[in-house]
Image (tube, rainbow, N blue to C red; front, side, top):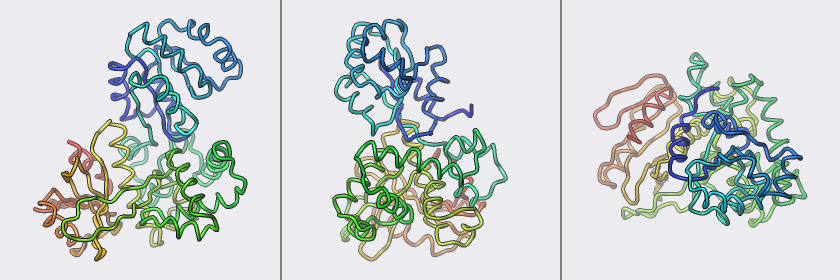
Length: 389
């Protein structure tokens, strides 16, 4: 198993809560992480029909089999079990007794909020971050990383990305959507997902997206909510402080894995990203996703935003705490640093009280500049350490 940066935080949650839950996208490694961190606990898959039947028909007898707790995989399969878990942990009062894994969109969070509120420490697990996996393929180019993405099966089993993503979309994304909202026109939904991928890193105009897909605004809103609940995409909100200028109110749309976004956008190999139109958006998606992973896996409280004024000046990523800007980050996919890249950062810093600014680019070189240090893409981990220190 490749060590996960979230493992220490997961173990920490087990010291403070009687139940720990891990949620996240399909195939992100939730089960593997739970079994590694809690190797001393019995592992039970509630997708097993016999186990599910017992847990459903005799929940007290089922839980009695595990006097010292257990790992329950896909716990949302037996929603009635949550109430009995509440009674059990309230009576036992030991911390870290049970570990639940599952998908938020299929009832895990609903079961927790209804029956286990205040008793559960929650970890959102996303695919590998760059530092977790980069040592396994140190010579790979930026384009290779962007096209392949970071889902564990692509590294654990060496599956070619174009095969794995095709199966992932058909087996999980579209099947899960049918289960959740009974999509009748799967072709329209598939087109909607493709168009979302083509817009990663862009301002979200939901009305225009709906029109391009031939669906209503309400349908587009519902389908986007499904993709968010599945941890496939996120909306990055604009920073709300005005600084005397009219600001963009629309969020930006990002996929949380560049490989999935690239495949859906029609990118089939790394060579297509050397000079292709998707290089810039996917590079920005990579940087934003790395910040999201660090925040999620380290249980950080900071918020992420972007800033854009009416004149089109934009900062790709702001790390904030309340109204305070802790860092302003600009992403540029170019390999050679250009002086005009720094103008938006300087402008924003003059308005926002001179917060720390930094720039991440698609080349390898770091530059220790006085006002805005520059980092190559391979230094993303150092950037995150600096910002979240």
